[in-house]
Amino acid sequence: MYEHYAIIKDGQVVEYPVNPRLQDSGLPDNWWGGEIAGQTYVFVHNQEPEHDYRKKAVENNKPWYHAEWGYWYRGYDIVDASSEEIAQRVAHQTEGMRNHIAYEIAKSQANLEKLGTIPAETQQQWDAYFAEMQAIEQQAGFPWDIQWPTEPHRVNRIQATVERI
Image 1 (cartoon, rainbow, N blue to C red):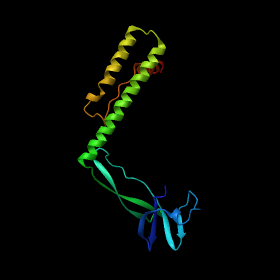
Image 2: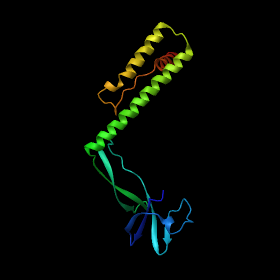
Image 3: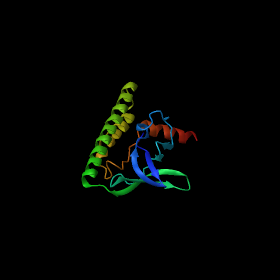
Image 4: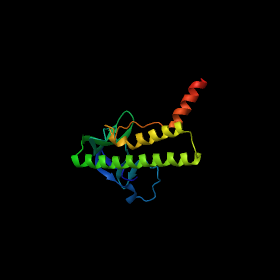
């Protein structure tokens, strides 16, 4: 929390990031800045820019002042991510998606077990759903762009709603 402060002088950043609580431990949590020991501290808003996480990286830059809004903002540069960074991100996303797929399958199977015996047609729908879930990793956009299959009971619920309308 305290890394979002800068010391400014004559409208220019002198030091960033700084922790004003090292100078005054009694500052409230929602302190926006002010004078401490002859130095002007300002709170720097941290608003990371949108970027393509798959291929780009964000590097910190000096804070800048938005005159129209009257706030200081943390500066960022968008740069190409290194091949190592991209590989780590893909591995992390792949692991997360595999875990999510396993969770969704286990959840649906547990719900089915609670129902007990179901009609053969419904069981076929569920078998197809589980096969589609297990085939997600073969999709061209995996692990980023995934077309999630719809659970059979959700399809039946939507169809029932449409028929009622």
